[in-house]
Length: 332
Image (cartoon, rainbow, N blue to C red; front, side, top):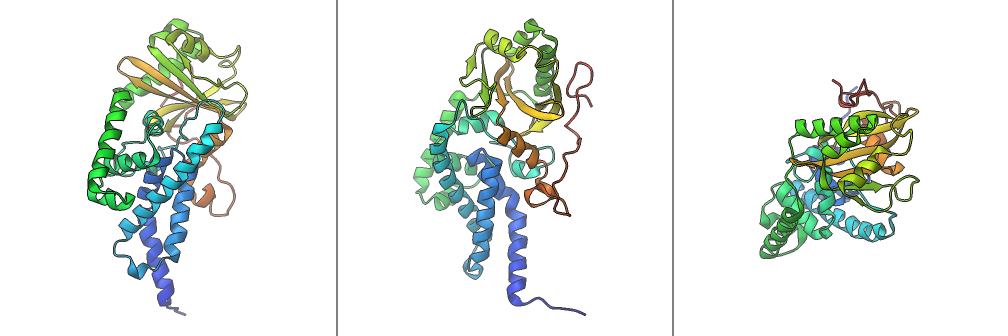
C-alpha cells in the first residue's frame, strides 16, 4: 500500500533536509563564538525548533535565516555565559571537541578551532567574536555580517579590524601538526620518566600552565608561569605518572593527551606551541568538560550520543585514541 505525504509533511521533510545540510556550519559558528560544544549544541537545537515554527514560505534564503538566527542566539548565550564565568573557580578553558570523528566543528575553514585561539577569542566581547568568526572562519562578506549583527558595514569593518589586531598582538606563530605531535609526545615522555631537564628543554621561558577544574581537587586555581615552575608542576604529585595511563586523542585539530587512572579519564592535556617550544599547557580537570569531550565523538551516532537502540554508546578505541606503549603515547 502506498501513502502520499501531505503538503505539510513534505514541507517539514524539506525543512529538515535543509537544516541537516547546514547544521555543520551552524554548529561551527556557535562553537567558535561560545567555546563550548554543549552550549553550541543547545543553540543549534533552539534554532531547529524555531525553524520548524517559522513561516518558511516567507524566508527568501534559508542559509541567511539560519545563520543569522544561530549567530544572534550564540551572542545571547555568550553574554550570559560571561557573567556566569565570573564565579568560575580558577582559570576557565574552552571545552574541547574530538575532531578526529567530528567534522562538524572543522566545517569551512579551520580558523578559530584550536584551543589557544578559542581562549584568546574569549578576550573579545560576544559581538566582536561573532564578527571575527563569520569573517575569518567562514568568509562571510562585510554586508552579510552587517545584516546578521544589525550594524552598519563601516562599523563591522572596524570591529573585525580591531579584533584581528587584538588577536595578532597576542597570538603566537604555531607549528605544524607533525611538530606539535612530536612536542606533545616528548613532553609527556619526559614527565613520565622524571626527566626535568628534558621537560624544561621543550618549554619556552614564559610558559604558562592553566588548570581548569572549577574547584576540583588537585587543579591549580591560578596560572603557573615560568619554565622551571611549570616543569615541576608537570611532574605531578608522587605516583601521578606512575599510575597514569596517557592516551593520544585529537582535540580541536591537534594532538592532545587524555590521562586515565584505573580506566577512568581524569584530565585532558592540550598544549599550544611555537617554533620556540610549548608556551601554554591547558589541563582540563573539570569532569563536565571531559564528559563533553567524550560525548563529542558520539555526536555522529545521534542525539545525545545514543545508538540505534537508544542506549548509551560505548567509547571505542578509535584511530587517534591509543594506549601508551613503552615510552610513547601516540603510537601508530
